[in-house]
Length: 469
Image 1 (cartoon, helix red, strand yellow):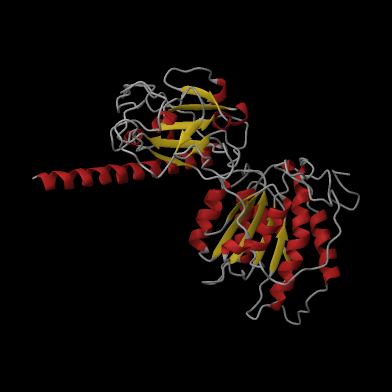
Image 2 (spheres, one colour):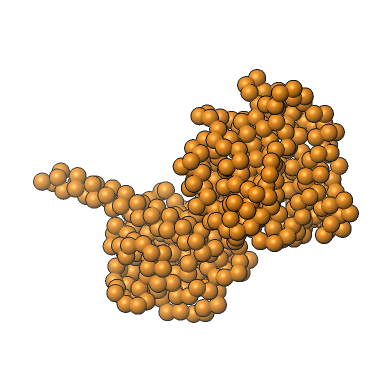
């Protein structure tokens, strides 16, 4: 009997742990889906709201930072003094089951979010939250200290500062010890996460914690991406791409190349394209296997895919599969490319989804082991025409060997879902060198000896310099 009891206790610990893990994963999926649909994270619900009341599982405000003090939620300053609000998972706002409000230990999950990203009129930057994660020895547990946007966690079997399923406080928070870091909600925005668990009666720590990862550019050497057959570059030419970036310095997050001080986002995109496209063409022409075509376009239409296709025409920039093809010289490539780039003048909204689908219809499916590729450089979420998530789902079904890579030059985590659905890569960077690295990686030319002559850089668009000059 004693042995049986011990085995049951071991089983119970593992079952509670795995059950909590499954719930945490489903909550994170719900939060990311909410972000995709609404462009923001939800504000927390009250931790002490009783079951089956109007307040249970409902975010306290759709503008978290402006809500002020709300009973059942707690506010504390995080990185750079920006506020973080902590409360319960807003399961009813997310549209998920009420049972996801509590863990396998029958205690409510705790949800904390950087307030500015749970409100209107701001683009969520996955690398720029205000929440800090530390380990069991108070070391920073993220690459950039204090940069986490949101976190959800379970207090496990620890009662310190925990709330029951029905919203009753089990024990007032004792901020001392390991677990105190996760219940001093109104003191700071630092939370503890460690795989070292302690069931020491005097200082337990059995918490489980999850948060959305901060995504950075993946370097060439980490990807192992095959050289795609056909590549279509899609450059976001919406009005926001005309916004200026700060000058290059080690302290700035958005940077201009040294050759282009006072640049805009579209200038940074052009700077990288001037280097990546010739490398793609040169390496593509040397392939022992059949080389593929290369297309380039900006936004050419609005509202629906048919309009875009009608205006798109043939976006092909280079096609070695044509009879009698002769590889162009570098000067010819640079001249034709500059004409393309200077025709991309930022203006209007962001019809991203319909352009992705139109390019998919244009270049079609690749082959097993050698996909076709759409490479998107964008700074914003789609706000015209088809939802890009629906476009990605269409591509996944109709063109299983067509991938969409997203190079996010501002920080919009929902764009990640487009890449994920199509088996592509997601890169987030405001650094021009990392942007160029992402373009090399997306088209499989990493680590090659191809190094075209340095191009001539200039601002603006059009022969007279357009909007910038």
